[in-house]
Length: 259
Image (cartoon, rainbow, N blue to C red; front, side, top):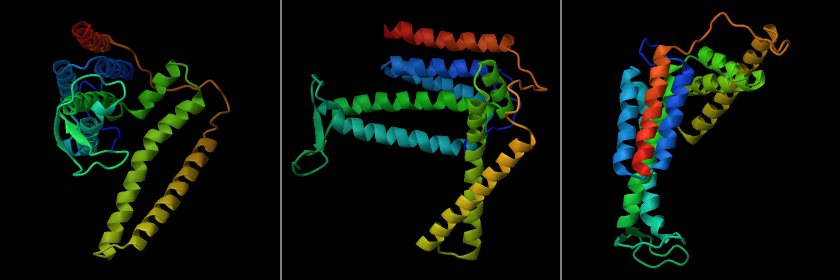
């Protein structure tokens, strides 16, 4: 579940803008390079940042599942379809065929060495692209993100939509697990009808939560004035400059070794 984890790590004390710069630099570097060494370098850097964030391993489980899905799907799809592209002009070393016969339209789906190599690059690239930006929601409080978006001159309705989405998604998952656990306590085996009732209950709960949010916004006169104030302020400090410089340095290293 992707949500803010309260901790006193160095990453939590940084300005959200420096973490956004880090995420953009890692993502740009991953998209620019196709080198195994450079992609591994980016993954290691992201992993070190995750360790510094002091996030419990159980919270990392959904992220790990997403990364595993990217790796499996990337390897499978690229191993089969990479050399079948119309613009591919390289060699084609077939290891084996997935299908025993040549099926019309799709063929025998041959797995090639070149496809496996590019599948590895594709998977490593996706890992780097996913790991870096996920640091932001895990280590940045929604109120800090609101202040940053205001400094960036985002409209208030857009800020509200983004922050509500960040808050509403974990809450929906929490309600899902609560309802599911309640069903398991009443019945050992669940049927298709139980899953339908679960989704209906989850929908009703989500609608009630949305109504409560709307009433809360009305009581606070949201939208009455375009000038919003806050007791809390954020400042781009010395550590943020160092972290941003480090991010740009990582991007520069990848660009130099790619050119």
